[in-house]
Length: 288
Length: 270
Image (cartoon, rainbow over all chains, first blue to last red; front, side, top):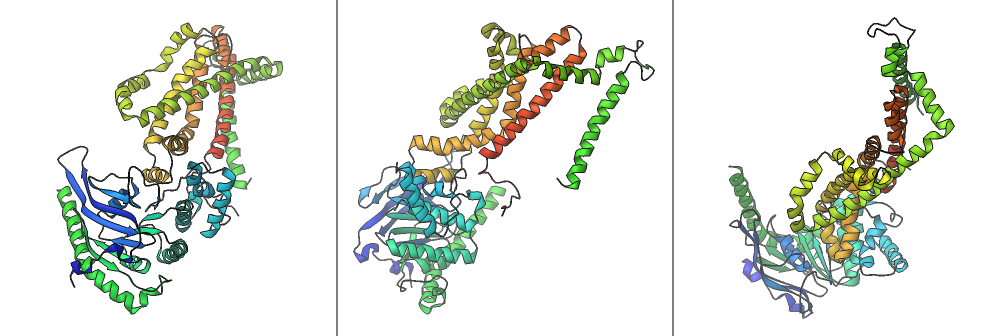
């Protein structure tokens, strides 16, 4: 099966488009040497419907995070534009919450203060913010840990705090950049189930970046495969029609899961090898 | 206290006792035959005698003469520290957040920092008189640069992730300054607290020594004028003890303010 035939209209379900990346190209210019250019992604169009869980997979260095930063409004694209619920995005995407790959909690704030930071920035009265913060701490399983500082929490607990920090603002769009890649496999599956549960309750639009195909299939409604960089673009799109609610650990054993995995991996495999060769070439070039 | 730490304290005390004994033995006019100086009283004249230094310190504290001088020195130290810290914080934040201003001022900041600032003391005496403010000014020039460089570094080293996260959570420019840049900069300022308080103290004492009417540095200066080595050393001892107290206070403050920072190998107390 060719990659092209797998692509279908993303808004087939007829839902409203929450986040639309339209013809995004990102070219980075080296500050020291303007002739050194690097195009991370070229002409990428990606739409996420309201309530849809979309994963983007691709080899390392293919520009997945670049796309997410464009969607968040943290990075202005060289060409193309972003639409949020039909409106053109200028500056920071106020309707999106972002979960970062690495720790992004403020180390000088304890857990509760971190969780309610966004509410404080929005001017929510302190008592109200704290009450909501406690609720969220309980919801992510951190009840009683509000007075701990990030360095006193384990990696999984920090991720849960970050999750509460993002979701407490009730964003319509959730952007996740390999949020669980630093966790061990057991913690990771627990977190994935927790995120799915929270998502099922509120049905936000999710754009989930990962290099882990299993994770992508287990969690998403749709998986988009990105080509190896540079000048990366989507080369395959697979609807995941596995029944919900899902358990990420159990679903991996289902025949339908394995079938999807094989089909997507057939597309992804070549790109991973290409990406690897690319990186090796670059490292030898810079070494010589 | 465990037996090991008790033994350590004992050894530390023995070192002090040995030094004082040696000092006493070598300076006592009658104990040993003089082997270097021709006059047996000369050793005591040049190096002082520990028992007389001790009596002088006791005399100061019992007589109450020292308090006004210590108070003045402390006031100068605290003022120099406070003004220097605020100044360094404001200018450091400004230059760190405005790269073009930083580029313009860079050579002048470097020049001002490399200048031996003690040499400014006479100028400050002319500008601010012989009272406390000329000493505060000298301490300020010492503290300012420590705080400035730390704030500058602290703001530049804010984790881009934390910054992006705060922006995604909806922080405005002012809120970023207040909730991200300032705490990050303050963590660097606090980690240099021992340094900056110490230098504020140095500024105060050196300023007093170079011309003043009050302060511990003034006591030392007076005694030196009359070749009263015992009083000079007594002044040094008081200053040292005072500096240790200041350092301990800073240590307590640091512990309270920096409790969010991880310490290596820290475990939870249950």
